[in-house]
Image (cartoon, rainbow, N blue to C red; front, side):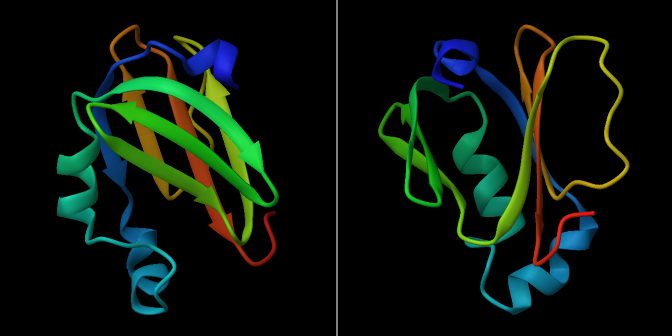
Length: 107
């Protein structure tokens, strides 16, 4: 994932309405507005996995941690169809995007 994402600029971060229950349970933090604002216009510096987590180091000075639960994290090239279900979508400046579906059981 580091090879694909390193150097990409996040144009937009979007949490779907389906995140409401995950936010209430404490699995998504901070609030959607705060998360979207903190990720927009950041550049991916590096990506690595450790245990059940995927770490994205962003410039300037920010980290995005993905994992903990069963998740489906997909990288999409420009023109790829959007999956039916996802909770987080990161749109990159080169028209590629990343989707994350967080679930106890991903279907």
